[in-house]
Structure formats: structure tokens, C-alpha cells
Length: 242
Figure 1 (cartoon, rainbow, N blue to C red):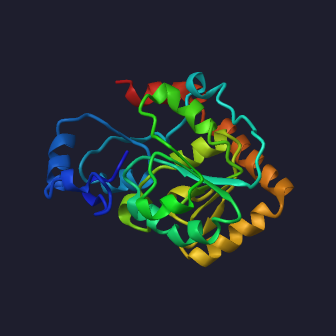
Figure 2: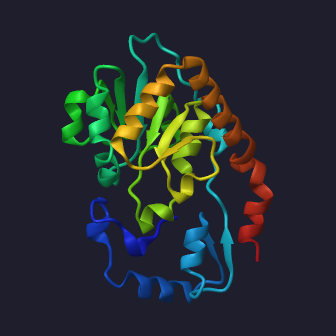
Figure 3: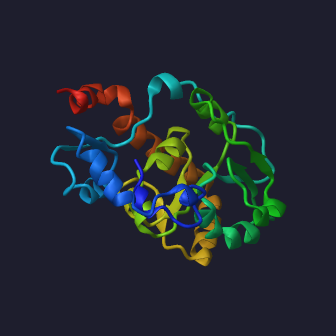
């Protein structure tokens, strides 16, 4: 699910990587009959290492996610935020100027990681939830009006899946994100990593609450119609069948 040969230096797991990760991977795949990956770039990377590769895009599990709904709390300002684990320092650095510029206009909500330079501008910070079955309910409690998904442009991120969009979309939250390969096709707002463009886009979208709601509903419908794992049980079974 990750391009282990290209972990960014600002990723917390970079220091645990192997300099010879590629030959290690080749040796490992030489012992396997089949490789299952989540994205096309990962499959392309491994083409010359193993013959049988199946691409199975990430999905959400209804049994875990159903019932997780944002509470719709009263608010003085729009709630705009981000959720993720501790490996996203380089990605979050892209929006430092965005968070500071809009601190008086929105309530910034972060979950899982909030670098020190952002703390003075963040209204709420929620710890990361390691229990996967509790994660959907914890994410829903962020109760966002708009979610952000910044990514550095590098080989590691180009090979990522669209899982962040699936999670936001299930909640019915519209998304502003980086224009990067894994986020293509989804009904979201894709932008170059230019802080001024992000600031302008966020302000424009928050000024149109009805349009914001419709955008969130479009993304939610897209997720529910194409990315729930129960609807793909047969293909997943086939991916692991002899």
C-alpha cells in the first residue's frame, strides 16, 4: 500500500527504511505467487518483479463505518480541518500559510497530527485513534464543513491511494486537495500547492454554504456507490483465490 523505496525524508518512517529496499522487495516477491496492491503506480513499479499482480483499490467497510455521522453542532465559524497520522509533516507544511491566513475566519480542527507552528492558530486538536473500529466515530466528531488533503508532489504520494478522500467523503464533507495522481477523478477541488490559491478557494467555497453542502453530497454519493468493500466482496475473494 506504500512505495517503500521512496519514503519522503520528512515522513516519520523514513529513518526506519532500508537503503536496499528495492532488492529486498524483489527478493520477497520472488517467494510469492501473487502481489495485491492498492494503486496503479504500485503495480507499475513491481511489474518486473512478479508476473501476477492484482490492483484492488482501497475501500471502506460498511460494518465499521455505518452509523458514524457528524453531530452537526452549532458553530460561530465554519469548521475546516485535516485528519491523518504522524507521517505528514511535509504535507502539512504546505498549508502553514493557509492556516495562519484564515485563523480569524474559520475554526481550524486537526486530528492525529498538529505541528507546533500550527498550534497557535488551531481551535481544536484531537489525538489519533489507533483502534480502527473507533476511528470512524472519532473522525465524525470533527464535524467539519470543509476538509483539506494537501500532499507533497513526490513519487511516494503519487503512488498513494485515495483513502483520505473516501473517509472525508463518507462523512459528506467537501474537499480541497492537492492536484496529485491519487486524487484524480474524485469530485473534489484539486489545486496546485500554491497557498494563495488554497486561501482563495476556501474563502470562495465557505461563502456558498449551499454549494458546499452539494459538493459534500456529491463526494459522499461517489464513495457510497463505488468504494464500499461489501459491494466488492467477489472481486476481493477472486484476488486471493488460487
